[in-house]
Image (tube, rainbow, N blue to C red; front, side, top):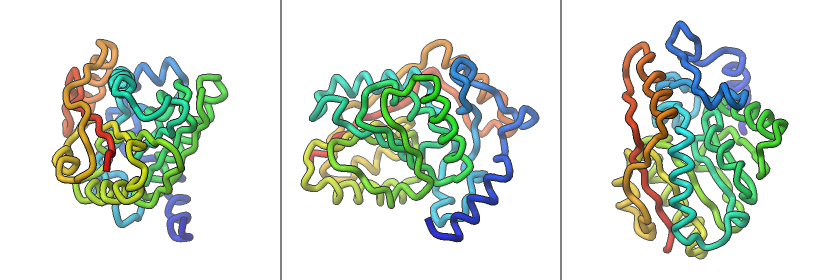
Length: 254
């Protein structure tokens, strides 16, 4: 990380992000209450400034519903991946506070990697990962990197990339081009889980990727109630909750 980015991160870590106080509508998800972590809240993209050139492409922070994540992961495991789950590295692009990482670590992945552009969110994700490990819930090692998803160095071996609508079309397009180049000689070693698939057309326009699943993944009643409550407490009412998420699963076949 460049010195200027480190200085920016230091400044941001000394102040709280907007929308994370009760007066601003902050509402705790049951996942946090049950597990002693901090992954709740919804923060519009305009408040996630880090000084990086890609700030304007950030969408918003919102933790994936645990039931949606687990449901999509079950579908992926039935898709005949190229190797057992223990051989896969799980990579969360736009990890936020790390909820998807925590959920993924309940399974025996080789390791869990999170990449997050905003230093405040990355710091929270690291603390959550430490609490998760201390509680004995992590079955995989976890690491959070503060940086640009387009500059992430992918490890050798099969990778499962998770995307919860982290950024807009231009960055998504560049990411897929980079993935295609990175995995050009690694046929079948890259799968992607895409939640809230607003940039699905970008995937459809990139050759080499094959869609394995397209459809809704339902929230449990508990998650639906929690997410509806979180959305209802937004001060500006910018986002809406639903009882399911539009998702897709893709595989790189070159």
